[in-house]
View 1 (cartoon, each protein chain N blue to C red):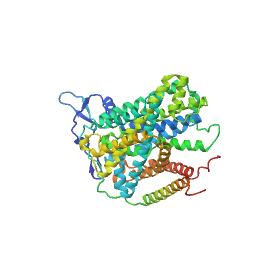
View 2 (cartoon, rainbow over the protein chains, first blue to last red):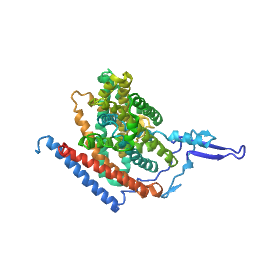
View 3 (cartoon, chains in turn purple, cyan):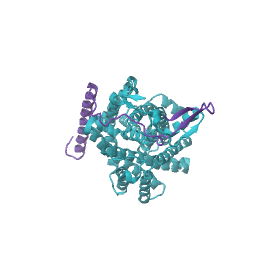
View 4 (cartoon, rainbow over the protein chains, first blue to last red):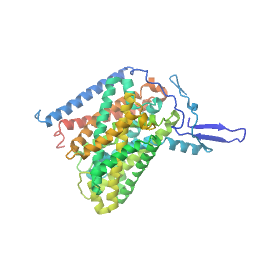
Length: 76
Length: 439
């Protein structure tokens, strides 16, 4: 935690806050993702990835068409 | 705090260099200042050389009629980048790593290759802008561009994230000078406010050039590299769970600042619009405005063009270096000295130096590179946002606390659909440029 609250009730009843830069703090434990494996293929994920493949195929197809058109390979 | 069986022991950290304060509000301000950086940098660096050109062109062609679009893009920028902040803080990993781990090698390689290609082409345009502005300032680009490239490489080689961040935040704040420029060119404030709050069409109505300028502005304001950059930056800075609210505020401050600066660039272009001037690049606009408003305006715009390109170069190169290094499992951190992360620094230096070298080649096809950047960035952005949206709904990783809420999803799917539509319109234009010619 960035601010640590200490009750110094022995000497003086005052609150002290310690502010620490993230790079000076001990590294925090994060959610482990290395061994989780691929994401579960729910219907939403499947539909999104399918739509993405379609979109990318269309876009790169159009791009290739335009490049060939500019190169004079395709006329029209 | 426990998330999915993982213990996030926030108090385990023994403060190495704590600052002791007695006032809670002051402690919060200090905490914010320590977390502050990645949000401002990622947003302001997006106002790079290409953005200066696009916003100035928008102002020169349509006056203040497109200011409403910037206001609309403000929440979009924030929502998109806030998601990568959450993902970065929870996983401590970069965006490229998460795509590899959760979607497999095919999508991982596709995203990485696309990112590296678009980033590299964008870097060439940044150095082209530096060369252009230096030329107008009377500095020979043959000397100026290599000096800029070496300085940009040296900027990251200090082995200190904090030093890099402080310098880059300072460069971001130099963009405050755009407010002085906007003030000096005397815009009609009433018109600007009216056009910002109420969308309106310019005199000529809806034309193809208007539509594609709108697409260009959207593409300029939200870029794929930003997702990769901010997540890696958050991970490198080791932001903690308790820093999330401050990192969100940092992102919001960055988004507001960036949109305001973009508005000032449009107002500078508006000064050319009011005088019916035509220009092909912002350096030419600077010279024309300098003739009316004095040398301050000319020199300020040219120096800010260089600053924009420098900010764009360091952040875009870092997004490439972080992404490539993370995927290959290399040590990739600005905190590490060169000998501990040679691959990471080599990728950064290679990106910067080769891009600078291409600009110095006489007759290099810069127009083709600029067009390629626009097309490839247009293709990549919707796919990058789809991965982001799916990752932010990955409850196995984020748990219920950090995954998207239903309202997040409504907003983000609306953004995805908007980007797909704009991207498809761009594709139609590329495939059949005559389709919109007479509209």
